[in-house]
Structure formats: C-alpha cells, structure tokens
Length: 495
Image (cartoon, rainbow, N blue to C red; front, side):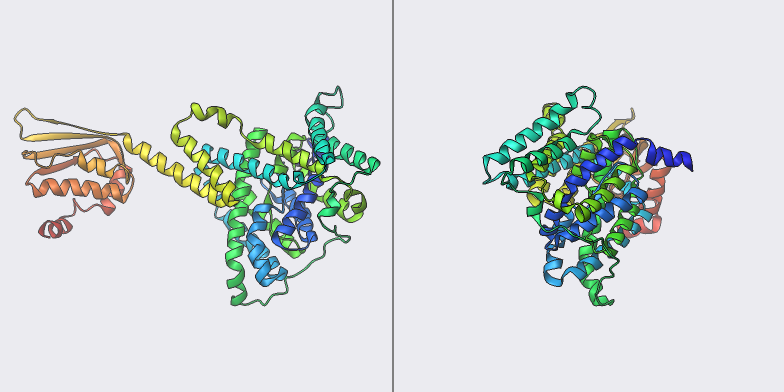
C-alpha cells in the first residue's frame, strides 16, 4: 500500500507541485475562454476544470496527464446551451460520463491500437496549429507593450533553464508568469489581463442536480450531444495519453482512463461544471515543467480553485501576454518538426494521411473528424498495399491435361478481383488443382472469389481440387463457401 502510494504520488513531489502551479495558472484563462465559447458563465468552466483535474488525478489511467474543460468539448455544447439552457448542459454532462464509463468497461480504449503513427502525428500537428491560432486574437490590434511582454516571456521560458543551479529547479513558464505579472503591476501597464476575460467565482462549488424533467423527451434532447461529447472527449484523451506515453517513455491504462474520464465528468456535472477531457497543451506544459505523477494533476486542480476563489484579486492581474507566451511555447513544443523533415523520406501514403488529418482538424476544429479521416485513409492505403502482396503462379503437366495453380499471399476484399483474374477458365484441361497452403482467406469477399473460380471451372467441365487451406481459412470457407456444398452448387449451376 505505502509502496504503491509512493510510486504513484510521492516519487516526484517537487516537480509535480511546481508543474501543477504552472498548469493551474495557464488553466484559468483557457477555462474562461471555453466557457465563453460554450455560452455559459465563466465559473462553469472554472468549476469543471477544478473538479475534473482533481477527480482524474485519483481515477485516471495516465499519471501526469491534465484533464479539464476543453475547447473541443465547448464547441459541441453551443447549440444545446443556446436552445435549452444550462440545466440541459449539466444533464448532458452526466450522461456523457455514463457513456464514457460504459466505453471503459467495453474496453474501447484498446481501439487506439488501430490509430496509426501518421494519424497521431497529424493530430499533434493540428493541435499545435490550433493552440497557436487561439493566441492570435490576443496579439491583434494591441499596443507594442503586449508584443514586448510576449517576446520577453518567450525569452524567459527558453533562456531561464540555462541559469546555473536554479534554472533546472524552477519551471521557466512559472518564472515567466510571475515576473511578467510583477512588471505589469509595477509599471501600471494598460494591457489585457485575466480579469478582463470574465468575472472569477467567489464561492466554492456546491452539489447541484440538473433541474430537468426525467423523461424520454429530455433524453432525446441530450443524448445526441452527450454521445458526441463522449466520443470527442475519449478520442482526445486517448490521443493525448499516447503522446504523454511517448514523452515520458511510460505506458498507461487506456480503458481505465475511459472510466476515469466518465467519473470525472459525472462529478463535474454534479458540481455545476461542463464536460471536459484531457488537454494536450496543458499536459505538455505539465511534462515539460517536470510533472510526472498524479500529484501534478491534483495540485493543478486544487491550486486553480484556491486561486480563483481566494486570490482572485491577484490572479486577475496576470497579463494575458505572459500566458500567450506560455501557450506559444506549448504549440512550438507540441508540433512534430521531424514530420516536416520526414516528408521526403516517408512513403507518399504516410504523408497524405498525416496532412489530411492536419487539414481536416484545422479547418473543422473537430478532432473527431480529423482522426476519422486519417484512420480511414490509413486503412485504405494499408488494404491497397497488402492487396498487392499476392502472387499466383501456374504450371501444366507434361500431357497438358492438368494445371496446378499456386497462390501466395492475402486474399480479401482488396485482392479478390486480382485473385479471380489470375485463372484461365478457357484453358482446355481435365483437372485443375489450386494450392492455398501459402495463402490466407480473410473475409466473405475472398470466399466468394474462391467460389467463383471453382464454379467457373466446373461450368467448363473441369474437375477442381482445392488444397492446403490453413485452419483459419478453412473455417471461414466452410461456413460461407458454397463450392463444396452439393445442393447449393446444383442450384447455382442449374441457374
């Protein structure tokens, strides 16, 4: 028990606490911004970020990953809030959590193995671009002070780690935020601050059951939104978990993370918060600031709540320019620069999948669409490539009365037509043998192709013998094939 506690919570106390402080400061303006996007009061996003971060620290499957209110989820809530109000959003958040817990028990987190590396790279690059684009409004039509503070903040972030002794101890983003806040307050600069984003809450969240009728009409209203929130939330969380796995050279329990996200969203809905999920930007900040364990996420959530409720006067003074500098650092660090260098080396299909994922995510601002397009393209390219790895050779006996075909490779929907086209049905032989000992039949399209070949030969009066089917192929052929079923063959031949 104690050893487990040490391994998951107390092995990196200083790094986790300091990283949690940085994440908490960066979460505030984002949570407010996402609330505005969704059309709800800023405290809804702040309560959600606190609640989700704290709960996921205990029940999540990926230590060191930050979960809170996110823009991807907020975009899905706009219509629901506009048409039906906040109470229905809270109900949809609860249902979203239930669906995510169900997905965890169905082990849908394991489906991440079907997402190729090129899709993950495209997802990462798209998010990096979106994070950078989200900072542009803060850098448009502003005074030179904002540009100067942003540039100074970036200089602190990248140069402070080289300061002897303390450079590696204190996270540079934290130094950036604190120092830029102090400068803005001392000089009395008239620049946009966190306080200008919206009013911060002054009370702790309370238990709140959604005030909606518990009937099928309510379910019909919230279910489409809850299902969309659950899918996008799990998709972004699973992708972010994969990225954090790579950054930290560790593994995570994806199915536990699905359940954890569900529990966190249920807790958020009951405390008056909106649905959320893992945040790639904040997770990268956490990891790069030294956060590795569950304590970092817990610290971020607790400190976030304490700051916005009890230190709101100080927090509201944080200049947005300092936080913009931190988020620009995140976008630069998130983008996979190797993917640009690898464009000349990687196959064209890999590059197309990566670029398509980036384009769809950036233009739709919907992570689910981009990943879906990427996965479909990757599957199509893979099927096409594997379909070419099939070869059929043939040789006739000396007397010309028999011909032996030898099939090597994979026979499925992509290669079925090629399989049929390889046989010469007009060849005047008495007997044909088809050796399938080095072939594998994967689906009913392949079985139908084998039936077609056998029956065509038999129509020409040729005796056909199928040899060497492996056990798996024989199972599917026996179940769905018709060429070895006399009654079915008679009907087909007669027809």
